[in-house]
Image (cartoon, rainbow, N blue to C red; front, top):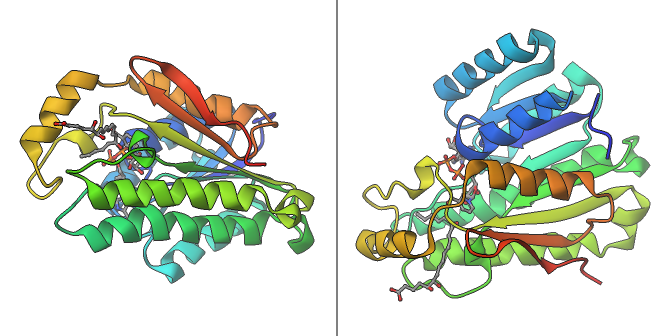
Length: 253
Ligand SMILES: NC(=O)C1=CN([C@@H]2O[C@H](COP(=O)(O)OP(=O)(O)OC[C@H]3O[C@@H](n4cnc5c(N)ncnc54)[C@H](O)[C@@H]3O)[C@@H](O)[C@H]2O)C=CC1
Ligand SMILES: CCCCCC(=O)/C=C/C=C\C=C\C=C\[C@@H](O)[C@@H](O)CCCC(=O)O
């Protein structure tokens, strides 16, 4: 997929993976709408990108992905600013087992909302040009994780959701493809186990030591692989320190 001139939306882009995905897309010549619930940090990140890549190439929209109107506003503003949308990355996520409803709301419902909007805006039947939706899952989407049941459930759900959209003939005719990136632990704020993050911080920390932490550069490389390869419809790519990038599903059919 030629990325130069494409228009992308990245949720949860103030920091972590989302910031890194926005950065690589800008480096490849895309225009990017960064959105995040954290307005001060989102604006700061976008300001830095504007300086590096040009003011006309990045915008920030404050958005809680669990609030349908706010997410819809992100798509409206992006279309207005750049005239089209080609790439949507549903990345915003939290890991909070005490606030487990919120974990499901952000990781699963928020990503479903972003996918619905992407389909609406990018479908050829609606005047779009087709495009790609990358949902950010997790290695916890494939197996039981007793200390993060809600988080794991959200990621299991997101994999099923992404694969289900990918087998729709209508979506295919509309030029849409769907993929899911599923990293194991990676070095972001999400794995700094603050109060309420997991049911058992000590278990999580022990596991972290045992399975190690994937580098951000590996996460970005896998993200780019899913994006670049047009045959990646329905692909679910797992990324771990031990095994590297490994397709769990290549396509959903
Ligand atoms: N760091 C890790 O070990 C792994 C993370 N993931 C997933 O990657 C994605 C990104 O996570 P990280 O970059 O690690 O975390 P992070 O905590 O560094 O960044 C998450 C971003 O999402 C934003 N956000 C949170 N709730 C939001 C909401 N309701 N609406 C809009 N934005 C919201 C935050 O403000 C933050 O900027 C998440 O979906 C996470 O589940 C997947 C596998 C491993
Ligand atoms: C704060 C949580 C952030 C979650 C980040 C993420 O998405 C990545 C998770 C990566 C790997 C998870 C592996 C889980 C393994 C468990 O199923 C199990 O093997 C743990 C067993 C632990 C034990 O026996 O003590």
